[in-house]
Amino acid sequence: MAETTQLVMAGKRMIVPRLLKRAAQVALSVAVTSAVFFMMIAGNGYLVGRTAFRAGFNAWMAFMHRSDILATMVVTAVVTMLVMYWQRDQERRPGGSSRPSL
Image (cartoon, rainbow, N blue to C red; front, side, top):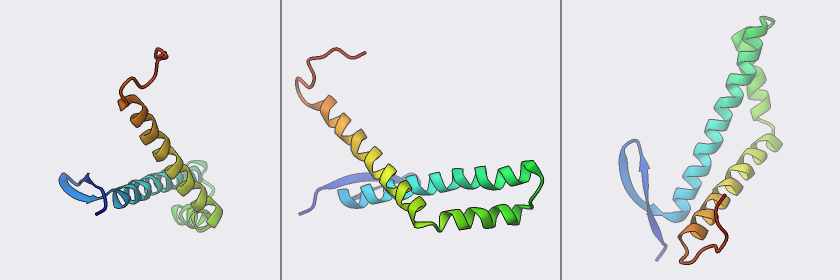
């Protein structure tokens, strides 16, 4: 049987497989990163005044459809998540680290 964990979304607690929780966390990270890029690209065109909102949106869509950009966002989210969980496991381990924290 697969390991399960608790996933809290929209105020609801669900018991889900660990892999599904990690996939949801990566998807959420990619969505937030995409939204930040949208604000930067569309907002830049709006503030400069050279382009309309629609042109900024089109520029963002062209940017987001690039496979290298999407791959970079996904890899960054996965690596960050793995490092955070690894670090948390190191802190929980009995006798974890003999070095004092800075």
